[in-house]
Image (cartoon, rainbow, N blue to C red; front, side, top):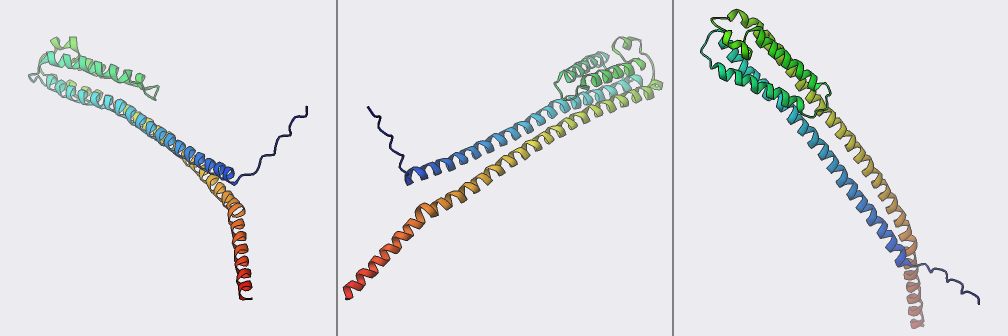
Length: 237
């Protein structure tokens, strides 16, 4: 038995243009998806960088404020002013906890924990040099203003170290912004590519529309006009 020869697929204008509009819709959906994903990625990167800055910078800022307040009390103790020494010691313990918490934060700078540890050691050394460390306070009697300049210098050095640590946090934010710029550039390239594809598809389908629709319709219209003209001439005859 001879197998039936498959019939050739007949060209269909409806199928052709259905495929064209499906391609255009797909390009539109891809463009929308790329835009949404790109914007979401940029926003997430910015939020992540801002969150890291708030955590890193804020922890050191809180620590610096506590150190300043504690230093003022230390100067009062050196001047033999009436200060609650137990509260002074408790404040030292609180500051130690702030150092630990700041060092425990996950940060872009690998040297941050070591820098905080060094600042803590220098802070403690300054207090010990002035006789202001916890177990030294019972022996601190009389006026010790002579120790104030060295204590102030040590405290200033610790503040300088903390300021340097904060600068690294700002640099980490700058790095996050640079990364975001790269993502923005990638998004622009992707959207530009889709735009060129859309323009090319539009020009292609315009040419096909002229070939498949407009020209045949114009030919039919001219034929109808000739037929009408011929009918009119016959009627006059």
